[in-house]
Structure formats: structure tokens, C-alpha cells
Length: 364
Image 1 (tube, one colour):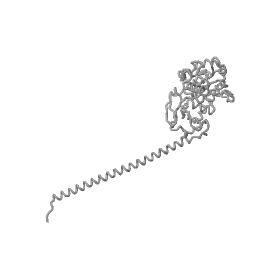
Image 2: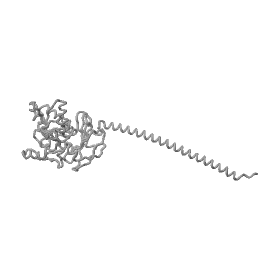
Image 3: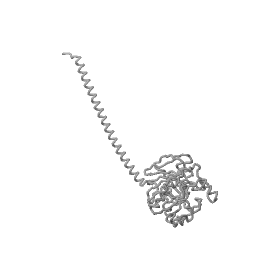
Image 4: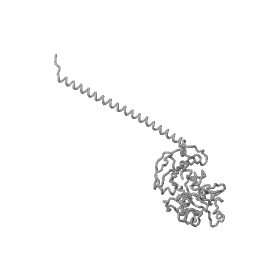
């Protein structure tokens, strides 16, 4: 019997082992590729499911937001009747989607709500240079008794819009801004001359937001006869009915003045004279004050008891108003709403350590 060739056996074994190794490597690579493909497919399917779930979540969230914020009104809030102007107390509810905003004290001093009267003296850091000539700043579209008649920029702009609309809508003209801002020196001179007046820094006129309105036309005696009794004619009646829409409110209501049936609030304002004075407070605050029938002092007190309110017109949220303590720093951080629909926001110090913020949901 012939003996086998050892070298041939080794070669054959080597070939067999090489084939087996190549097969193993191919099989391993095949398995790895298949596993990778399976994993990729599984991952793609998982991503697709996650995307479907995310899309469903976004749709559900949008539907929830739509149902709970119709006309910017959260269904968790008290429900307005849907008729006319209303003020609802939201003090049990925080601002929605709040964020922090830094506000300058100097900017907030002149936005309308600075309370100055016999009990609240004007702040020492009040900057009189912030007061502007009504005639100049309105390009002489508002008649004045003199170019020295001044008030805040925002107040003058509101007065201009108000009197222009009186003319356009009703043909009412010949309004005159007779008196407005008084310096402390001017106020003190009046007090020294007549002790029935109010000392320097304690008059609403020292805040630069009030304006005394009269009528005058050099060739119309009938108009001039109403100059000191404007509420007896259409000019004054239109102002009483509409000035709040521009952020202006009648300042000093007393018994049966400016119209019969008016409650006496002289013990609240400290003024019992018949004064044809309108005060700028901003449109949101004016809408709330008009709806509630409150003078400025009463309104600030109301906000101290109801620091978060909503002002509605026919069920639609027009203004959201909140009052926050900020102290007397030169700047301060406050919470503001970041909810959709806010067209503008105005922050105004009230001279009691608080800022009153008005968030408007209507373009002005």
C-alpha cells in the first residue's frame, strides 16, 4: 500500500482551512450586514413612529391651545358674559408663559399712572425735561393757550388723537388745551397766593399727565360762551363719552359734576372744584376705569386688592393688567406675559412702590 504524500496532505488541509476561513468571514460579514440593515430598518421605523407621535402631540397641543385660548382667553379663567365692556378679576391666576423683563424707572415714571395728590408727593427724581410743548409735539394740530402748555409725550399724543377724532367723527372743533403741567415752583406760587390751592409736588398737575380743556373761537360767541361749561354742550359731552378710548379720563368728579348724578369723589381726590380736567392714564387703564366707574385714586386701590385683571369687550380679551411691587430702584425686573396675541405692553410706576403693566391684545 502506497504511503500518502505528507506535503500534499498539508496543502489540502491548508486549502480546506482557507476555504473554511473565507466562508466564515463571508458568513460573518453577511450576518453583520444583515444585522446592520435590520438595525437601520428598526431605527427608521422607530423614528417614523416617534415622528408620528410628535406630530400627533403637536396637533393635540394646538387643538388644546385653541380650545383654551379662544380670543386669548383661557377657559380656566372666569368667563365673561360676552356683552359690552367687562373687568374680571384674574388675581387667582398667574401670568401665562411668564418671562422676566428689566424696566428703567425713568421710563416708567411718565407712562400715565403716577399718582400725585395731597397724600402722595411727586418723586424727587421726576425729570421736568420729559415734559413737552403740546403745540410743538403735535405740530400745532392741538390749539393751546400758549406754547408753554406742556405735558408728557404720551399724554400729548393721546390728546391729539382724541381731539382729531372729535373733529373727524362729529365735526367738533375749537378745543383748547388751556392748562397742563405745572412746575413745583409754579404750584408753590399758587399755594402762597391762595392757601386753598395745593402745595408744590402735591398737585395732579405736577405729574404732567393732566390737561384742562376749554373752547375758543375768535368769531363764534356761542362757542366762547361754553368755554367754562363745556359739559353743557356737545363738545364736552363727546369728551366724557369717548376720551377713555384714547387713554384719557375725567380727573375730578364731584357731586353732579361733570354731569347730573355724578357721585362726589372730592374726599378721595382731594379736589372739590369744578375743573374741566382730563388725565392721561393709557388706553388699558382708561378702559378699566371707565368700565368700573372709578377715579384714579380708587383705581389704584382697586388694583392693590385685585392685582391681576382682564378687560374684555364683547367677550374678547382686550387688555390684561397686573400690578407688581418693584420698590424704588433705578431699574427693576418684572414678570411679563409671553402668551401669543400681545400687541404691546406699557409699564408705569404708581408712586407707591408698584408698577402697573398693561398688555394690549388689540393694535392701537
